[in-house]
Image (cartoon, rainbow, N blue to C red; front, side, top):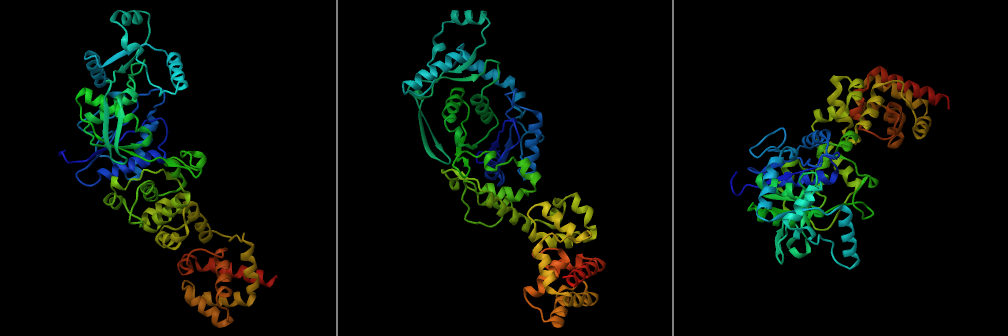
Length: 475
């Protein structure tokens, strides 16, 4: 990898299915590194064994691949900086823990959760920012040994240098400055021996050669801690960018109560990956081009300078807009597979291209395609719409007599069929088109009838018009 190569990463914790916020982070990171010879790395941060599950690791990989966010380094792909599951990197972390302890840059802490909670409450009551007061930093070697002999399980804290200013230029938010005195010594190894997020996340970014880290703004205060760690160990500090949060309509952080769903749930509902990518790409990132774009197009116009600092707002209306655009731009074969097995069971395979072309503009989800498959390929036709019944009744029996005669001559040619009925009855406009559509499809709106007509076998179309003739006779 050359010195100018961008290497970004996505590092989820496998404690649940991938949700929209995390997926957006993955998308931005992938777009940043997509131009050659960039590298997009996937790392699984599964050090919290109580919450991490292998099924979620697998789900993350499946969801990213479905979105087209393929990684060039990481699980299932490999690379020179593996392993890429943090649960398999214990030896690496232990070595760095030892280095920090030996150099006096970290120390054992025996404070209980109860003691720490009490300290935090006291500091807050006094109007002070909550931070560790350094209680165990002053323990003598004998005091440490005595506590260990009592069976106490210590954490390991990083010794934050006093009176130091941590500065960095955030890719999104510009210059940032933190005083080390406001941070306090922080835990880098839990009492169970597992590394804390601050530690393993920073160490792995450096060792894996990550040059750019895009992550949520909730991690902004973590960054000075990680910079201090990396500088203490002489490791490379990546460029950090903290992207805005996604909020619901009420201004609260996005959650299920706002209608937000996991990527898996969106996929199962029938959203196309291109719809989700185009929507997410515009959540907190400005594009001059508002047209639907594939990933290469989104990447070509992506830039950290276009990432906004203000929160982004989740809007299902916009997501549905991009779903419609994705359907318009999807290849016919892709849409046919997307429509699903129930549609395939109803529509003859030789009619698949014509069916997709006919209904493409009138479907948003596979269930809508199934509705039209049932309308066009099953009998009897259900007239559930009272308006359709009324239109058929008002057209009268003579209308359908002429429609039947025209059908025998012009079966698949809807325009000629319409001209025949118009010449024979004088009907025009809605009085001409609505009864015919209602009779043949049971609906007053839908796909272009010129595309629908070839999908209706002569016998089926004849039976439907005959049924409407009898209905009109009985009014």
